[in-house]
Amino acid sequence: MFEYNGKKARILIVDDEKDTRDIFSRHLEDEYLIDTADSAIAAIEKLKTHSYQIALSDLVMPGEDGLSLLKNIKKKWPEIAVMVISGKASIEMAVEAMKLGADEFIEKPVEDLDLLKLKIEKLLKVKWQTDEIKRLRTILDKEFDRTHIVGNSLAIQKIMEKVKKIAPLDTTILITGETGVGKELIADLIYRNSSRSNKKFVAINCGSLPESLLESTLFGHKKGSFTSAIKDKMGYFQEADGGTLFLDEITETTPAFQVKLLRVLEKGIIRQVGGENDVTVDVRIIAATNKSLSEEVENGNFREDLLYRLNVINLHIPPLRERVEDIKLLVIKFISEFSDKYKKQELKISNVALSILLNQQWKGNIRELKNTIEHSVALASHDTIIPEDLPDHIYKQESKKINSTSSLFLDLPYPKAKSEFEKAYIGNLMNQYKGDVTKVSKISNIKRQNLYEKFKRYDINPNDFRKN
Image (cartoon, rainbow, N blue to C red; front, side):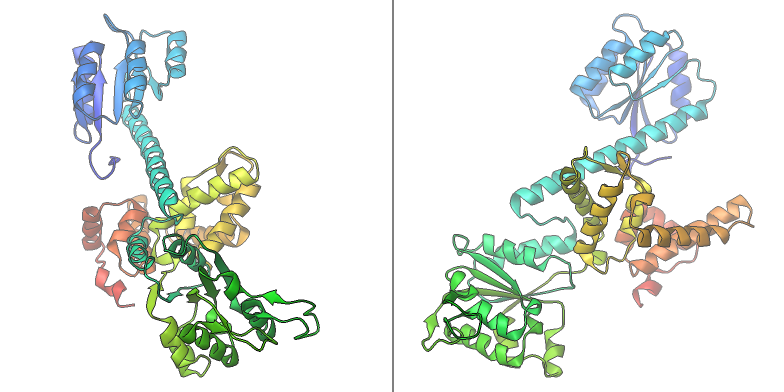
């Protein structure tokens, strides 16, 4: 049985023959919620009062026929998958039904009722995937309209709540998090929601420039202050006056530079390289680092007084592997972005390829995922990204895992192999997500209640994974 969003799917059976309705109902009622109608008119009344995932309709019926009902459903309830079923229908009528949007066709009499079940399960899986993509796109569009930050995980929701509170405050902020988590995006978000949004947002990576050039870039310089200084130049502090200055990788600065930065924070004044006079600036500073500032202070690499000045409000961005729920949204966003870039009709992604992406560690976080999707979109030769389109280091690594895992069960009888695989699969997910049952439930598409039943069956204790 395929559960639809964690509960039984509801199916409407429409046929003028009572025997057919009864046979189908008996065969399906253990796994699905079944309603029946003996005519298209009766079916319309049912459709008005209930929410269905699938409608099974005979094509040839007295009065309004199945084609007319199909048109009605696709016009008024396009979210419902329709399977047309009739032994009297000609090939032309069946083809016409498919042209009108029928999702599946099966001939009557249906002697293999298990085939009917199989077709229904297939329809439900396709429908669930389509609905899930629509749901994610709705979230994605909403997030972009509002914040330009992609994500709907609890971690991102908490960050958004904090940003709303701190953005209007004219105070210094320190953003921490691994490389590639999107610290500059968060800084820009704070700026756009602040009272300084009508002035400039200026960003600089402190680790990308040597100290002498960094000082000149930030504070500006006077003509003749060094060999290449052929004219006066205003620095980023003056350029961002009235606005916001984002200092990324602040820990890559030298102690000498840190003294000058501390002076700006304390007094709001700078002095250009080669200059003799102080210049007053009004700048909000947002700093960021991928290191522990307290450890840098202990090691003598960072001034403690500057730490206190910068860390008035701390905003930590968790790595992507700790907010797996956001990966699907990011994948959709990047596929759309790079489909446009490479002038391709917007690609889809196979379930297997998506599953591989969901199970990566993403040490490079969003930046690494973005590069992976660009590679996959650029190389995809069909309308769907498949595992072979992923970068070699990801695809080959996953292939080795699959081959290694498969070989463990080759000598076992099928029921035992299936049981051992399920135990290993759940155990691996629990280990990867440190016993987080909610995440494992979402990734595996297994309901929490069913997961706990499997824990009991396989003697798996979630607490054992939380200790690691």
